[in-house]
Image (cartoon, rainbow, N blue to C red; front, side, top):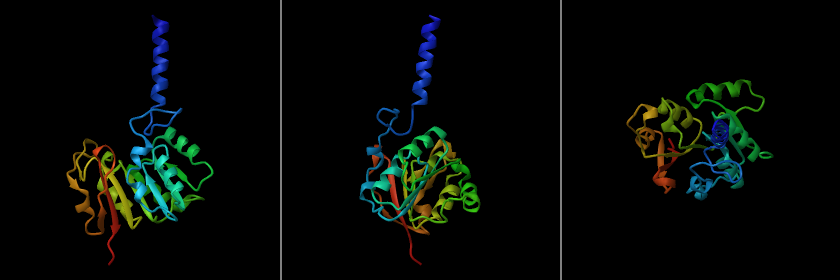
Length: 204
């Protein structure tokens, strides 16, 4: 009946609002857990480092690296409800989050440094690019700018060759693209058969 349909619609809307990137007990459901997402990150030395988490979702990775001793974490995410969760989960820490469309990341990063009272940094010890590059229309423009901000990059993708509808099926081998500036230190095992690359800037 009409009342039952209305109730089911309200329930569906509630479930949709509570659908997030990370599964968080008592708050939201999703397809991934933080335990999956931190695979291999447990082996990285975050202590004392500044970290930029691009596409930070609800901030669970940001919170994790702080727990591992990071000096500060800055996160960027386009979805407002995700950032509200991130801000709440990282309250009282050195984490700071910005709502932005990463397709325009160079613009927002430079604007923050010019205008913010607590701006983003000009450079970071490590930049996290976890499951984000392939979703952008111009992924290499984004990657090249992000790569200029740090001597270390940690990248996770469906595969080492970028080839996704959202990035117009750009056929690009990411290690080869970075090879003139960065050494591929490791390709550690990560979640869901995805590929991860740890890159360090090559010394002159």
